[in-house]
Length: 140
Image 1 (spheres, rainbow, N blue to C red):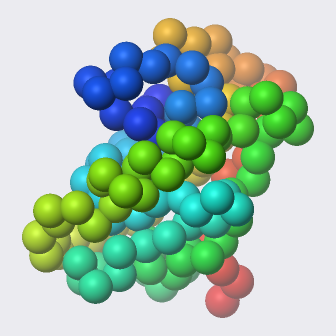
Image 2 (cartoon, rainbow, N blue to C red; image 1 turned 120 degrees about the horizontal axis):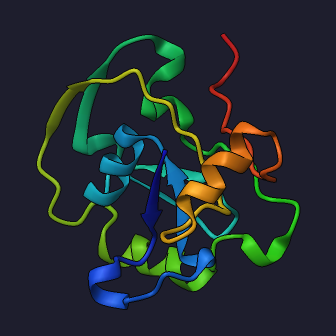
């Protein structure tokens, strides 16, 4: 798992947990590149016209369009709508060229993990104590 800033740290200098989501390496890269984002209802939005993909149907990014992420039980750790709006307005689809990739995408969004607390979060996740959960791909 990677701790991913929603509003880029280089711009915001913000390590608040509400400015972060935990992602696998592939999902983190795709998020930073602007190929997907979150709307204010915590649903995945995909820049579907900006890339092509192949791989197992249930693991493709485009199949996750509109799926709501699982959020921690404690709402104080949910992503801040202000940061999600920044990502949509400044990263989503911004300057993205066509990218072709083969990806076994694990889009795990655990919203309580953030920079500086990642090791503790990983340990809690391993022990089943972290409140977040993985986004499930659509049923086949």
